[in-house]
Length: 297
Image (tube, rainbow, N blue to C red; front, side, top):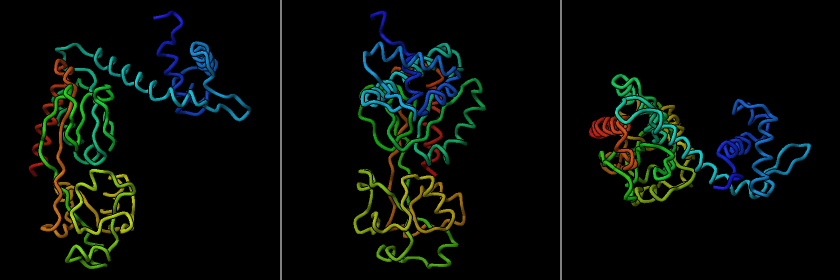
């Protein structure tokens, strides 16, 4: 590598500026001084031979090149974090960091109890929990383990199918007392439905034929599953929820159970290179066992 190739610390500073929007905010986020951060930006621009920001009295405006560099710099950040996690513990030590990603509802409603039990067994392991309904790239090592609702296809991934999480239609008793309970699928159209803002392919695939459950039918549209679940618990209207999760709240009533039952395949996935990491294997096995129990009800 040439001696003038920019190092990771310059790209880290660049990402901070892009994320925070100014040199001063980025310097605070990184625990640096503003002059030092400014020097990093000048060194990076010099190494690349191109300007990354247009400077004006109003602040910094990223150039087109800066926007193009962001995903590549983020990939470097993921790789650097993965290197640090790998080096944080020896192969046979039950300590170090494991980065885990899951969907919003699984991460916020299902995993806390599961991870609490794991923590009691392995207090030396630090868990980084990332909640996102987007599929994390395990091949790029954005995370060590993922709980997914789609079957992975990459050969380099180790995947365990833990079962199918059943989704059903629910409403709070308070809502049903005020608006009545639909007896047929057709009657749903007359109710306040909670649904998505952006229809994803897996939603279209799961939706039963004849169900009036499209964007134009919804009284509340959100792509946040946690917001949807909160609205359901508040009595806003009728929406889908994981059956095992809804059963925890006696005020949530399942509707049209015979007509509507949607299975959501669930997988625990990790990169095959992490088989040699004892801490990752332990968490992977714990998640498989606990989620199998959750899926079975």
